[in-house]
Image (tube, rainbow over all chains, first blue to last red; front, side, top):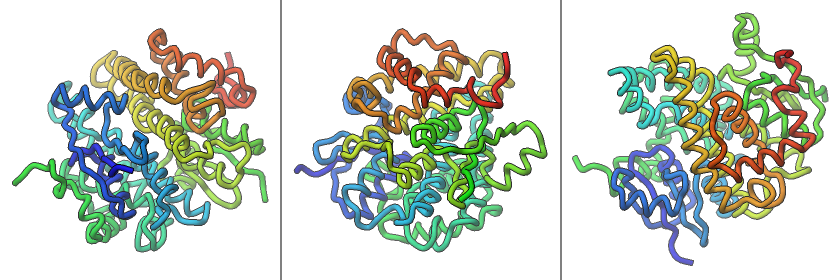
Length: 212
Length: 212
């Protein structure tokens, strides 16, 4: 089998989730940076993914799309270390937290929606994204109060932890969200930030990240 | 064990997915209609779900949130009929289609976002939701061209089929989307619409649906 290829963008939240999963599973892969702003690249990219979105993972002869689906696939085919708890109850809570971030927060604060709203009214896009994250974090903090231990659900890394760092990155780096009201989110994000596999998946560490 | 309780709203896409899953699994449950417009109900509801969103499923002593997580839980604990294929490749495609709808399309065309945009500019919210669905369906039609059989992925019902009907309902009933360019989506939605468990989960059939 040839080496897996990850089509990724350094700043994409959805790409970062898959980068973390691949790192935790110790799956070596080729990084293919995608910049959707150039036409040729977009054409080539669309052939692989009708949704024209990163990430795409080519692995075991398959072309896989949608970060949450890719993570579930990796966990089924490469079970160690597991990214879901054994118990159905804990699995449900881990997935609920992951989907709360990936469906309720992330899509409503992405760059495309922010730019579109800025076009209608200057400053509105930034405010919108800020408010979406705050509302989402209000709920997330409550969920974590119920289920977290050292990590989002108990004391082992789960799919929920793979989804957390990029939304906290957006909150703090892009939309100036005050993290004061979110002590559990902040603590877990800091904890995850010190783990080598999470560090390696950080936006700033990707080959296509802007050089300072 | 007491009978499961589903907190649902007749018009909620996310609730409808879980209603279909419960019907297919032949799990009898109590329907608790939630109307988030009344304060008392909202308070009671928030105690069960920090995200203040339907659906919530109380089952086996647990309080479960997030439709996609609830469906995965039901499929793990009540495996018949399965809602995911056996093969990891087909599972990945079924989940990818489900997540494409639940994360890329649904959150960007919900009622809250539509109203907010209508406030900024009359007519803008409706147009936004229309366009989000069209862009999403362009991609979905391509995905279905690759993976569909009688249903979204092959010839058996999967999690992808649970997510399809409500977005087609929104497209046609709320946002006047021309389905001409989407023959595969239309064919599968029609096929699903004739299945008793899907019929029973239809918005118009819920106890809290408006009477005509």
